[in-house]
Image 1 (tube, rainbow, N blue to C red):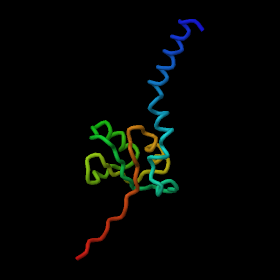
Image 2 (image 1 turned 120 degrees about the horizontal axis):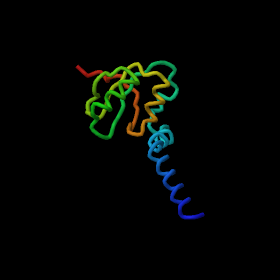
Image 3 (image 1 turned 135 degrees about the vertical axis):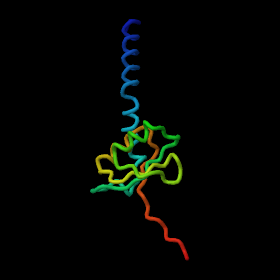
Image 4 (image 1 turned 180 degrees about the vertical axis):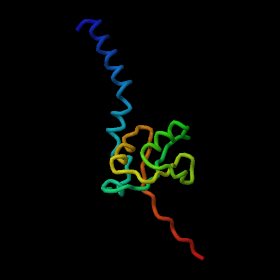
Length: 112
């Protein structure tokens, strides 16, 4: 192949990586992000979305599109969502910037 064709193909490849790389990475690694307890969900679930960074307003707004924002779960990077549909669980796990999607565990009763 000649040099101009190689440069053209390289440029096209870089554009594809820039446009679709994050979505492809998210789809390829989504199975490791979703809590096994949520994999067979048939109805709405309450979840904790774990982020490895301090979320900004953009992240909170994007996450609220998948369920009802229910506050933080102890740390700033742990966001509670309620009424997340099974389809939205899968979509959440495909977001490359989401570290984990965990099921909400019932609170442990305190001893008197």
